[in-house]
Amino acid sequence: MKKTLAARLERSRLVIDGALANPPLIKKTTPFGYDRKTLQQAHNQYLETYGLQMSKDDELGAQRDATLALRDAQDEAHQLYIKHVKIIRMALPKEEELWKKLGISGKRETTLTGWLSQVNRFYQNTDQVQEALAQFNVLPEELEQAREKVQAVADMRVQQNQRKSQSQQLREQRDASLQQLEKWVRNFVKVAQIACEDNPQQLEALGLVV
Image (tube, rainbow, N blue to C red; front, side, top):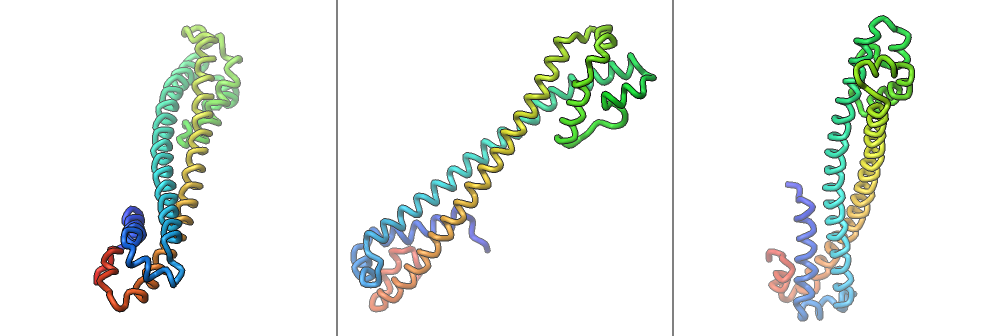
């Protein structure tokens, strides 16, 4: 069974901290280049890896929050947009060329990229239908409010992408740090096994089953 990342980190911690708490074992591994200073450096490497994992978890949580906020903002803007589209279709039912210019012919886009393009196209051309909208009490102030809501969605999308990029960078840094840590631990365990051949029970301090 594949170990979880938490289990892999804990495994490394047990080996390193177990050795640091066992001076007799350190005495035996020191001739092989694994003295207390080297073990402390490994402990610092563990702390760095653990910190990167915690930062990644925090960033992932922030990314989820950003996604939910983006979804809510889009829903709010979409409701206002659909209201305006329906009014134009009702008020100007035979203006096919105008419909095309406003982008209200056919179906509404479902992807965020397509939706932003379609909605922006609509509000960039509403100056041509302000009279028709005003008949149904849709004034320029409301249109400006709608544009602001759409812009907020676009801004939040940028923030979400930044979150994704930061999360990816943290994951790469964590993976590289963890790989380095586990390589050190594997080498240390091999050395400890050699150094403790006369007393294998000392290896239990590293969390190893003897």
